[in-house]
Length: 258
Image (cartoon, rainbow, N blue to C red):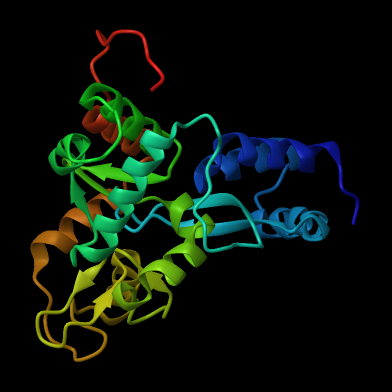
């Protein structure tokens, strides 16, 4: 295998984004290599990354079903670590958001709850700065936001999975179909098992009936239909929707550090 400058450009794009949408990755590979064999290029890059204990993983967003390429370490520990650009106050907020998402039972937390949390934390963090910080977390794919609710982002799932397993083992669930850990999915009212929205969509396309893969009980249409629509959205439309939901006021004063 010849590891070329084109491979490096793909890797740099993924590293820059943290999580690169598959469609944008395909466009880049097609432009650089003249084909869309993304699996081959990702495998070649991963072979180069292996001695560095790094990897590019593919991960579906649990809310939209969109696929991302995530840059991550193959060595994970019990501590959730982030770039030092964030203050301890901001990271305390994020860890509390994580805790609520995992333990809530529904896989998300409201934006109002997140902002109100600022007044209960033993740290100094304004609601304005908290809103800006959460907006950054959505842009960087650590969180996903839809309709005023925050969900686990693809980067958090890939990069911090070991932390979640060690910290919240009793609260974690597995997808009925792919058997991977999930934080948000479609829960069956009959047997209480949970399935990734994108896994359920593929299952339904093959079988024709919207039913629980475990007990075959019919699943209500409203939540699933919303997520199915989003899974077909163009990536630019999806990003626009996410930003409109979470973007803080443009009139906000210059950022402070606490």
